[in-house]
Structure formats: C-alpha cells, structure tokens
Amino acid sequence: MRGLGAVLVGAAPVLAGCVYYNSIYNAEQVYDEAERHRRAGRDSLASARYQDVVRKAAGGYRRDPSGAWAHEALFLLGRAQLRLGELIGAQAALEQAAALAGDPAARARALVYLAMVAHTSGDTRTASERVREAFTGPLENGPLAEAHMLSARLALMARDVPTGWWHLDRAAEADPSVRLEAGWERLRAGVAHRDASRTEEALARLLADAAAGERADTVLVLMRSAAEGWKPDVVAGFLERAGESSWNPGARGRLALERAQLLHEIGDTAAAVRQALEVAGGVGETAAEARLTVAGWRLERARDLAEAYAVRTVLLPAAGDARVSVLLRDLEALETYTTLGLDRPLGWFAAAELARDRLGAPLLARGFFLAYADGAPDDPWAAKALLAALDVSEVPTDRSWLRGRLEEHRASPYVRAASGAQAAGFEALEEELDSRLREITAR
Image (cartoon, rainbow, N blue to C red; front, side, top):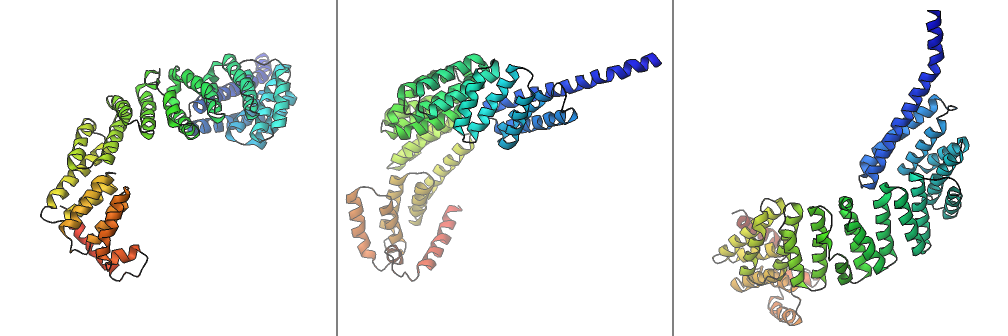
C-alpha cells in the first residue's frame, strides 16, 4: 500500500496539470464559438460565450497563477474582455500574458491584442507601434490575421486605401475564418471613402460568398448609406446582379427589393415594379414585403376606386401574411364606406381618412374628401374635408381652387382654427364627428 500511496502522491501534480490544461482547452473552444457568433452578427450569443470564457479563464488562472498554462489563461481572459469592451481588464491581462510568455510567438500574439485594446481606446499611435512590433515576431493563423485586420483599419483611418486593402487580403489568407469580416471591412471602406470601383468589387466578392447572406442587413445598411453619398442610380447599379448571387433566396430577395426601392426613388417606376414583382414571385416574408411594396406604389398613385381595388390581385397570393391580411381588410373597408356614402355622405369622409391614413393613397383621399364636401355642403364638417383635401393636394392650381372654396366657410370653427384664430365649438364638433364615424366604421 505504501508503494501505491507514493504513486498516487506523485501523480497528483500531473492530474492537477491535466485538469488545468483541460479547463484552458475548454475555454479556448468556447472562445472560438463566441468568435463565430460575433462574425455572424449574433451579438447576444457572442457576449454570453465571451462571459463564459472570462469565468473559465479567470478561474483557471486563480487555481495556479504560476503554472505552465498561466499565460494561456491570461491570454484568453484578455481577448474575451477585449471583445466585451472591458478594456482596462483586457489590457492588464494581456500585459501580464506578454510578461509571462515563454517564447517569442506567445509574446507577439499578446502584442497584437494589446494593439487592438489601444486602437479600441482611441490610442492609434500606441496601436500602430504595438502591431508593428508584433509583426517582427513569429505570427500565424488567427493572431496574424488580427494583426493584418488592425493594420488595415489603421491604414484606412489614415485614408491609405491601397495599403488597407492589401492588409485585408492578407488577413483572409492568414485565417479563412476572418474572410467575411475582411469582406465587410472592404465594403465599409469603399462606401466611407466614396470609392465606387472598390465598393462594387467588395460587394461582388461578398455576393459570391454564400455565407455572407447571413449578414444581408449589413449590406442593406451600407447600401443605404452609399445612396446618401452617391446618386441612387449608382447604388442600384451595384445591386443589379444581387438576384444572381450565391446567397439564400430570402437574402437575395431583400437586396433585389432594395434595388427596386432605389429605382423607384429615381423615377424609373416601370423597372422598379418589374424588379419588385420578380421578388414577389418567390415565397416567404420577403416575397410578401415585395407585394406590399408594389401595392403601396400603386395606391400612392391611385386616382379612382378601380385602381385601388386592382391592388388586391397583387396582394392575394400572399394573403397568409399578417401585414397583407391587414391591407386587404382595409381595402374591403374602403369598399364598404364608399357604398355607404351613396346614402350617408359621411361614409365618404370615413373612406377618405382610411385612404389617407392607412392606405397611403393621397389622391384617392382627396377625391373622397371632395365627394363628401359636395355631397353634404351644409354639414359643419364640409370645411374640415376641404382643408384635408387642401393638405393632400400638391398641384398649385388645385390648392388655389380649394382656398377659394374655403372662403365660403370663413366662419367655420375648422377654418378659424387653421388660421390660428379662436374657434368656439371646435372641440364639440370633433367629438360629434368621432361619434358618427365610429358608427360607420363599426358596421
């Protein structure tokens, strides 16, 4: 038994070392998982994993602060704190990791992340010095990629776009896992520096990468930003081949629909509708969004009921979508109020407000407001209808004509309120109108 006891006592440090190593190894795996979440834009999941790394690495270090794996624990701890924005803790852990590093490679990689801490803190001078020093050591894989990514950001901040571009390419070569991150940096740089050719190239490279489709939101945000700096037709050109990309159908559709919006913005209505209808031919939320977009454009231009009701043929294939269902119900209500207006002109007032406030159909709303004012000229709300028609009229001659009609209602509380004068009876009229409209809309 004495021999066995001696063996167990001698094995205890070895077993403790294995447990410590396994703890650090597990924390490293969690860190890699956190990095994947971060690069995919899953920030909440990434944050939770980084916090796990902090707990595991800090616990491991406290168990054996002078052990062989102490510098690894500190290196992990510092990187995780950096990602969480805990810069003071990150700097302390990484500086200690660099001090404990037993070889040039371990020190060089710690310097890379110390440079990143300095850059995040706004100290670009220290960041530049430390990353240059790190490059003098043996770097490879992840740390080498991070060094190139940081060098790219520093170069781009200095408006040295060619050097920044070169470092981004080197980063992707050093570690394929940063390929997409480098791609987003290229696109941001192209937009920020208003470099159309580089922006187009960066976007084309991302569109050719199926994995980039997970971050379609990032492209949309950047393209909208680009449209503010360039003319929308330029950005529409960037997105021309979005429908042929390697992305999943939903992501492709969102970019194609953004292009349709840009085309509509520059007045190329026919091309915009064609693009949106191509997206509408698919399935899912994006296809429904495309149908709603086309419906919105048509309602915005609709001058009569036939044009408004024709929108239903665009919407019906996506009737299962909640937003489409609401719009279809509003169109049904419009038809109901319009029919009711034949006997009770106030039905046309209800139809006008629905067209203006829910359907986004100002021309149709104007027609209904005028129909009510003509159908019930002696109602106290005829002046309110004329004012509402004036508000949605853009043609100067129409506005002049409506102001002439409002002269006949100079004593109306609505006209007086609109001119800033005292308007006795205004609130009572509003309450009565609300009551009457509720009777109509409750049918």
